[in-house]
Length: 266
Image (cartoon, rainbow, N blue to C red; front, top):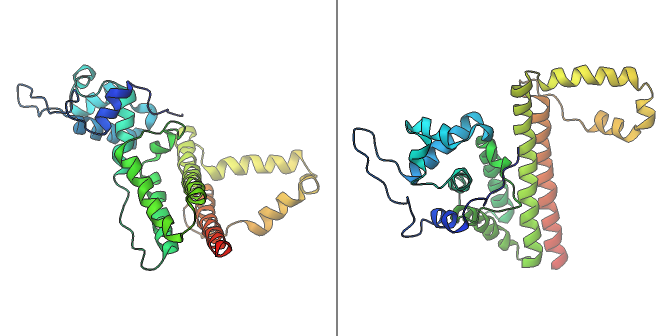
């Protein structure tokens, strides 16, 4: 499931994201009775809670209203619709990402810490990975997250033209590795079949139906034989272990490439 940001009314969405003065629903509205007043912040918090617990597919104005003890109609005074809510949710959770990294040990250590924090963030909020990057939200925390990484990368003294692509490569790489983990977990939950069970059932059929598999795909067999990550003997599923190994080794290679570019420039 892919969700495109920025599908609601552009002016109202941007005003809500940046908490512009005079935004409809930006102020808390008072309701009679013992129930607390609603607010944009409360609605966004409830939306995040729904998505964290049940995934993006479960997100609706009705589901958010039920979590708040309200009807869906009661929310529209504050947030125009689900499209605007997704934008607000996405930008809000990005505020969890740290912004202060110590560059004293050098840019590489700082970028490594940033990458680890970003990886953990995606696993904590897997629905974020379903928000397409084709249409950015353009909210304050989205810009703050990018500004944080750029501060670390500019310490390399590489040109802006290079760093523009390096920043993109890092974000795409971490999102891709984290997405493998989250989709693996979703697949097991949705189908009731674990990764191990799925692979065991089909790998055996490959041997049976393609007896000359090794001759047809020798490099693939070599890669699986020589390059597979060792089984640590714990309960971590195979694809999650592979994704984590990909993250560790891939990040090292990317950072090595940045260092090579620095030395080449010098």
